[in-house]
Length: 323
Image (tube, rainbow, N blue to C red):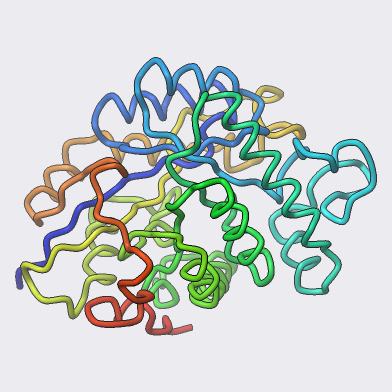
């Protein structure tokens, strides 16, 4: 069966995490396999990454970070609900637990987001093309409202809605990864209202939770796109984003966001993603299926006034995944 026509942005997350990561991301961009990057302004290599983005004309957004490493805002000068006693963010799950318990002061979240937006402008000399969230923190309850307000105030219109249809049924994902992906999907669905009210835009579809690290292959990327597009009439034009984490493995102590590189960054899985993305197999398959890679600037964004993405052709994307 013919698929809808799809324009696909391939975003490499964690730009600025370490020089070896950035080397692989730039390699993928120059090969035409990555079309956008998200920069960690608190990353160990943020300054050199910004220079690479300028040199190669890479569309660059902000990877807002509230969970790993050290802050760049006022919190770095004293006690904060965002930080551990050691002065680091609370971690991927620790931040989520603190938000759920009501222990995070949302005005402090706003201050840190604004500081990262300002830092991005200092590094790149312009506003980000988009802002998403490291470890998907931007869709957490309460945080999503503050996030949307900050982006609107700074004139940023494009974000990521990490809602991957059917991810709960991906049996190859380990149980913790599948549970996390389903939680992110639920949070993303709940964040739609806040994002829409503040004029944010996002692609019609998103994939990447089911194809992260060792799980990435040409077959699975193609299958993920087919899954999220199921039921959409052939010939209908849609936009999609593939989240990716390519790069060469970090070698400690270089890298990270103030605490050194994590295990995923040091593993072969980053290199595996780089190889899958740059190999001819994936791009040939996508082209055969009518998927066109493009930059963010080429997309027709989801816009306020067109309705939130639960109407018309986008209704299938907000059906709950099986869990």
